[in-house]
Length: 216
Length: 146
Image (cartoon, rainbow over all chains, first blue to last red; front, side, top):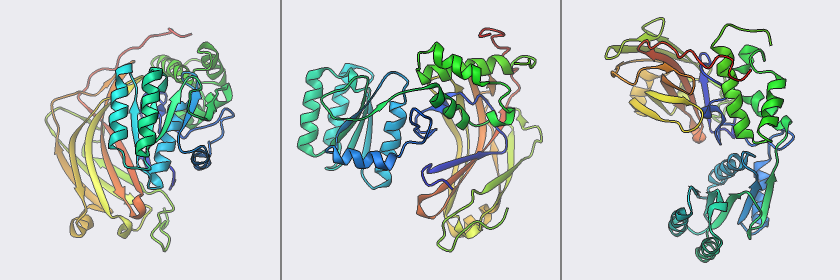
């Protein structure tokens, strides 16, 4: 049993599209580096402590920041450290971040997704309040911030291929539906955005499994 | 599957849940009853601390997901647990909706889940899909991406 997974799922047969959100969302696949190798999450947690407990995960859209953030949050929880999660969808969500910090026990980690949506003044205030109450911040952002950078997420076709290899159900089809050339094309079409690449592969899978099989 | 539990109670091999629906094709009309019989293989029954049996629907596709739990039951009591693992059965009256649907952008699926809890916070989920209703699948965007 996979100690890192927490929950293992099994089914008598695979049904559905392997590229659907339920199989690709943060937490469904372990974080992988740009070479497609599993990230050592425990080592990153140790690095975070070395950086003072607060840091940023930096990367472009669809580069795996949220996946890594979720993996780190789970690692903290496994270690008995409370880890809250807030996703910023708009600037006004800064209030939610402040509320979460004030409700967090000392030593907790608050994981904030999409930190770039925070205006600089609010970001400074949040950092001050977090420091005052002893709450650490781990954030994802597109660009480096005032917080130290923990890791920079980058993508490669190899990473996308490694993710696809881990999706359920595809092995039953022996690579007949989605070929390596599709993966490379999806990566290229979306300039390395893994999320959008997976959406394209979802469509391609639907397209090819809803009509008579063709020789690819 | 052979025995899978070490002396310290740690489950080393993933269990397998064999599930038998009372309708062989797993296609059920709304509002009728669905009967399930399952058998847990690959572990010693005594390592199971609790079992959750549920029936739910969920959406599958690109983007946001939704789900609804229609039936849920958690069994922890030792006497009841002995009747629920390794072999157990239950019946659930099905609702009238949402019907199963195999769309392109979104799909609606129904499933029965059996979740086993072990010591040390470990658990194992087995999910088994069935159809509620007989809505024809969407035809799809033929050749859109080729």
